[in-house]
Length: 452
Image (cartoon, rainbow, N blue to C red; front, side, top):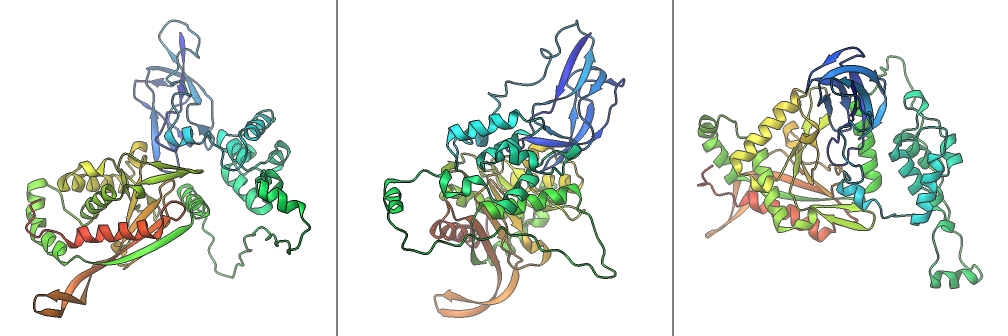
């Protein structure tokens, strides 16, 4: 009998690991082709892992709540074929060829010389403790030696050190990479260093420690669920990574509102879909990105990765109160009907927890509609590794000054705010401000005679 190694499949761009939340099959159970074997969870979505072969499950290589790297064997399935080496019968591609765009560019260090990075990684590999590739990479980038890494108390399964453990350690103690000795001096710096010190030495701020929370009688303690923990971690990481700047524009969308009011009934009859404002906003964003493509980028160290595809994520609130961002791929290639169907499909499946890993991967820009909750504007946090996110506020009737051939007049208009948060490392005010203005221009110039 052949032994087949079931591996954790690749689950989209930037997803390197997953947590096992449930084994749907146990050793001794028969498995059909494409039958789900286990449930996994990533920081983006929960999903099932099906078996590409039929046979009998003979061994589980991980337990529930274990964190597994993409491409790692997770179970052994006995098939009906001839006996062969289990490593030969694997549904996994050469990991060197299965590298994502971000991983390819990650080969360039941002803080430490390449030789020092390799030395640190090699040292971590010789430890008796298990460290995931992500943890080892972070330790290498921050100059954390093996002895330091071994001293970190892990909060993961069986005391495993997680990414958050490393981040907490860095925030509390700092890293060797931040010390002046680790960086080579330029000639001018060396010359000035040789001169007597005439300036006061800068004061090094102590690491910030989260203040203790006091409890009062009647307070309720609610433990974060897994998704909320991942969202919190992602938001903190984003603010730590990108210097956020937000630009605001107020847009007159009167023509757009009147057009939608006029066509929404006929649209639903013909297409079987309700048209909301979201696909209209996405169409305007896609057009603006084509005009100003440098907003559609990611940052990797000192490299700017200009994205070819325009994949727009739309933030969606779940019934649990958590947030997820399904992605409309190649949004610039869809007409308004196609965008409407894509938006409605993703929103419906998000509410029913039926999204697949690919539905939340590959985003290059994100739109969040804070107007859904009656908010007029917001300052959203960038969805890493993207460089910008647009928030659209509620549409309100307001008195506004409009210009006519007979002079300026005050009229009741449908107005809304657009707010763009962007990564100031690569997006300056000129580009950020021009982009949000460009989106507003497309909305304000809406053709009331347009056919859908």
